[in-house]
Amino acid sequence: MNLKEAYQQFGGDYQGVMTRLQNEEMITRLAKKFIDDESYQSLKENLEKNNIDEAFRFVHTLKGICSNFGFNDLYESSCLLTEELRNRQTEHVEEYFKKITNDYEKVIQALKQLD
Image (cartoon, rainbow, N blue to C red; front, side):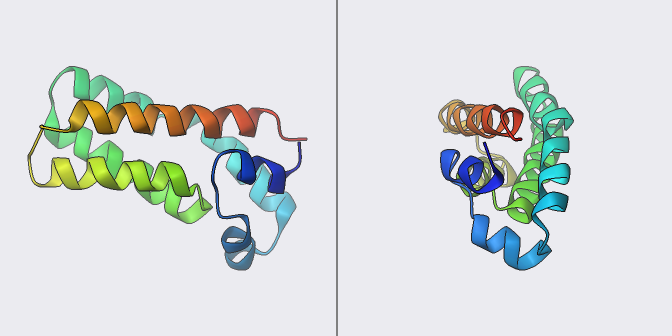
């Protein structure tokens, strides 16, 4: 799978990331590093511990990474949880985290298939 196909698979903004970074080989190399990023796992662990401050920190980090790489669907779901936790609300945390998990798994699956 090439980079453009991967971005289509997980709802990413291929054109946007190409405009910003302008080098498909570099984007591919850097995006593959996201597979080993620990923000998602740290978010999950802190939500399980009900540690709102740390969960907010990790979802905010995840949101930033997704913004930079044009992982649009994951960015959008991360935004929802970021704002929920920023306001110290927990009513929709489970729902939003399920969406993040779904979007995250799509990104990881596609990145693992990159040529």
